[in-house]
Structures are given as C-alpha cells and as structure tokens.
Image (cartoon, rainbow, N blue to C red; front, side, top):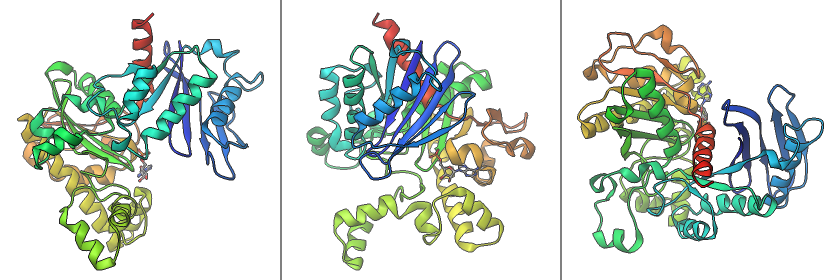
Length: 401
Ligand code: AMP
C-alpha cells in the first residue's frame, strides 16, 4: 500500500509518499510559506529531479491540492490516480492523556485533539488544518493520527507529576507529557535489534538531538521517563530553547529587562539554548563545530554545556532504570556530530563505555560506535519518523478493514 505521510506546521507542510511493501519513499517534498507571499512547493520523486515551483497557497487546502497534483502529474508524478494512495498518516503533536496510541481519524477524534490544543497552541491547530484539508480533498481515504506524545503515556506518575499543588494536575492536566515519541519508539526498537536483545527485556536510552532535543528512558519497550514536559521547552539545551532552568529566572528577567511574561517565554523558546549561549552566533551545530575547531570560546562553551546536559540526563535515566544496555544517538546533531557524541561519552566512563573513534566518525548510518568490550553499547541510529508513521497507519487501516 502507498501511504501519504503529512507533517503540517502553521506555514509549512512536509510530505512523503511511502510504499509500505518495500518501505521505500516514492516521492517527498515540502510546501513552504503557506499563507505568506512567495509560497512554493519543492517536490522530489525517487530517482527523478527535484522540482521547485512558486505557487499561490493562501491556505493548506491549496498546498494539499498542489501535493496531489505533483504526485499524480502525468509526466513527473509517481501514481496514476489518488486510488493508489491507500491511507494518509498525519503527525499530530499533542494527544494529551487521551491518546496513548495512534488512531483512525474521525469527527470524535478531531474534537478530542482540539481539546488538547491549549497544550500545544503552536502545533495542534496547524496539524488539524492539514487533517481538514486532506479530508476535504480525499474524503474516501482513511486518515490516521500518530501522536508525538503517545509513546510516553506509559510513564509512571512519579515521572510525569511536577512538584506542584496536585489540584493543578486534576483541574488543568498540568503534567509532563514528552514529545518526539514516534522517534524514540522507532529508534529504541531498532537499537534492541542492533544489540540483538529482546525489546521487551531491554534498557535503552535514546538521545534525540536535533534542533529540538530530548532524551528518553525506554525500559522493556516502554517509555518510563523523558526530558520534555508539559511543553517541548523542558529538558536539554536545544537549538533555540533553554531547556531546564530555575523557574524564578522568568520573573527576574521580566523585571530586569522590563518585559512581559509572554516576551520572556518567547526568549526562552526562540533566543536561548545554543543560539543564546553562543552569544547569538548560531543555532546550528555545523557552524559551532567549525568555530570550536578554530578555538572560538563562545562555540566551545556552548558545545560543552549542551553535551553536559545530555550526559546528566543519561545518568538520571540509568538510575531510573537501574542500569542501561544501550545508549542511542539520533536526529540531526545525534546522527551527524561526532564531536557531540565524543563529548557526551567522555562522561560515561562509570558505565564502562569505550568508543571506537573510527566508527564514531560515521554520519547518518545505523552502527554500534562503542568497542566490542564496552560494557554499555553506544549506537548511532538514524531516526525515520515518516516510516514509523506509515507503519502505524498501515497497521490501523489493516485492522479496521
Ligand atoms: P533536526 O531537527 O533533527 O533536523 O536537526 C537539525 C540540526 O542538526 C541542525 O540545526 C544542525 O544543528 C544539526 N546538523 C545537521 N547536519 C549536521 C552535520 N552534518 N553536522 C553537525 N550538525 C548537523
């Protein structure tokens, strides 16, 4: 079956058409600047040339129309008609406590996801606009929602509760939810295979280090703790997000800089993390690595803070699971930056970790980078959220036939 995977943001839409028999990507692309001047679609059919076309996209409906036209185009398309697309899998960010699993999307599900909107005001409404556009244009094609939060619904309450008045959890559902669940689930399962241990009897720590970053403790195939919280602001130092900090800092900055709460939160989300620590230099690790090799202090300190925070979480999650069999690095930084991997692993001597530097020099390849005698295995496992979404969609469509 061909499954169209859609990841819809407020002004962008990424798509991949995946053949679930071969698990190959048949075509992929991106619609950018939806609702803004200069919108364009980038379309890459497998084995064909990448095409970029400027086209008006006042709303996501026009964007999906352009995606459908590109996929079915008689010259450069990859399917003859929409009948060759068996299902659509949507990445949905926040499913709150309502969704511990992926689900076939119907009116009831849409209402329940809308009720989670206040927990992810930037993401969920955009995701739902994509769902509505697909339902309008492909009303007979089953649509499946795959939630970023679902995998973490197995966290026990000691991991998900904050030290706040309990009534806030009862009244407002303020608790830790976690994100990147599709990635953590996919990577941890691959890791168990690579280590040749049963997933249901394994202790794995996944470090998803991208522009957004999180660490998850996966015990016996289930997430038992993760570093992101009610929102994706908690946890690691990220591209532009601060991660963990003393909450009193928020009022302190507001007073010192004469800013509103919303303005301070904007700083914590958009101007902090790697970008902030490097003195506004960059949020991209490629630039940081280059500058650090050239001896630039702002780059060196930023990489040091980033790596230290990752190592701290690995320590915490080793304690939470009473041990660890394997540690995985994934996503843009985790898959590509051997500097970050090396720095993190320098803290892991107590776990008997030794790294094979030749293997650690790889980029974006599934590989064990620890030496054969390393007590804990360390791996690089490229994530593939789109494939994981397509697999979920296929399983649900088959189960509901
Ligand atoms: P993601 O959010 O997973 O797409 O990761 C994006 C981030 O990965 C970028 O902002 C970079 O910091 C980092 N990245 C991507 N490619 C490389 C590379 N070749 N070397 C180091 N970092 C990289």
